[in-house]
Image 1 (cartoon, rainbow, N blue to C red):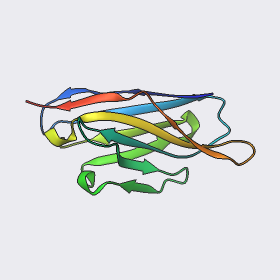
Image 2 (image 1 turned 45 degrees about the horizontal axis):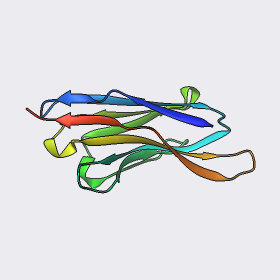
Image 3 (image 1 turned 60 degrees about the horizontal axis):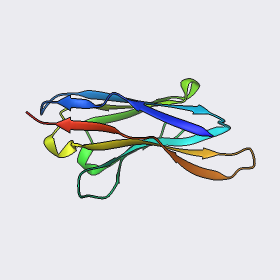
Length: 120
């Protein structure tokens, strides 16, 4: 079993910043990509940003230039630095990890989500 635990969400004013963290623990053989998705009320879950074990990153167009994803492989932790936040960034943010078993089978695991609210 692998657990992903997020932290760092909250309420922030437009233009403000927040930093999300997600720690993976448990029976981990290998973590490939880690990243963040979000789901706003009434909308589907969408990719925000992800990062491979080698450090390659991918961002949604809506957050490019404002958000930065980073990773500490030794700590099995992924971060999301969110700057210049907008009300449309309000959503539940979910951590995701794509892991591999010792047999080479890949699977996704999700955190429980953390609420980010951008409002004045």
